Image 1: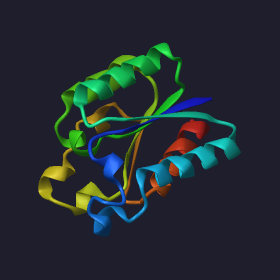
Image 2: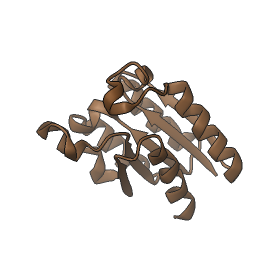
Image 3: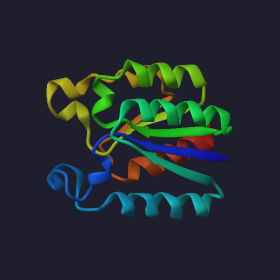
Image 4: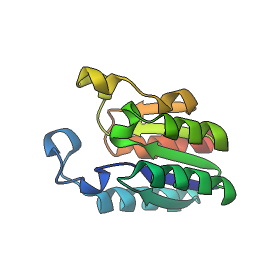
Length: 142
């Protein structure tokens, strides 16, 4: 099984950005955790991170041509603004799980809106880095 993990804006700044919300572990720590988990599960995993909406859309579309079996996505702030990401997920038809390190429903009002959720098979939020592992396990069980 091939899984693509996509992270949106500012997630490359984990460990620096609002550690009281996102913790002090880095983006590299997150990738290492996911790689270890996938290795144990026999899953091929790749990563893509960008601060640019169009690059994220391109990565989702490329996943279709690369025959990816599942996607884990944390769109960051684009969760609340991007119809383009929703359209990309719906277009490619690959089972996609939305993940958030924090729980957006317990934060500012504007963060409670998720456009991409409409195209996802599940949402996991507020579980820290563990949410990514749970998303991968969900895709493996599906």
